[in-house]
Length: 189
Image (cartoon, rainbow, N blue to C red; front, side):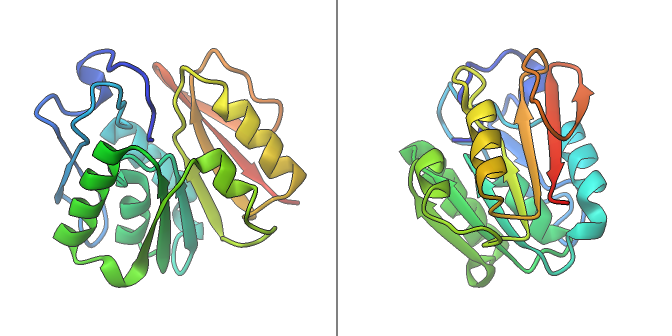
């Protein structure tokens, strides 16, 4: 699920239970946030910066959104020109919000929802299965370093971006920090 930490305060998403697509064809459209106190939605300002960094790679990309939660990352990528998005999520409240958001945007034709543990899912896909991976794993479990190791072992996309606690140093890639959030960007040579 997209970040499973306890919500730390107002900077962790909208207190009213919604967030929005920041830019692109669906810019400004509201998204439902899972009714789950453990969900930590990526703040809009972080998502804006994150997807702007990836901007040149988005048009036509096949995106994998791991720990998808509401689907905000993958839907933002689609809004900015990605061709398709596969969302991997296992928590029922997150799946409900994700499916609702896909339906509200009319994005069913370009999306696939996989109900699965994200770490298990990445063991089933081959190198190069996607063009880009966006991952927002729970901060309370060591998923970020484990996902990095899985990607280094078998790069399932040439570009992988992992959100994590800024106190966690990932041993590869370029890390950008925004307050209490860090995103590490990894690219195959």
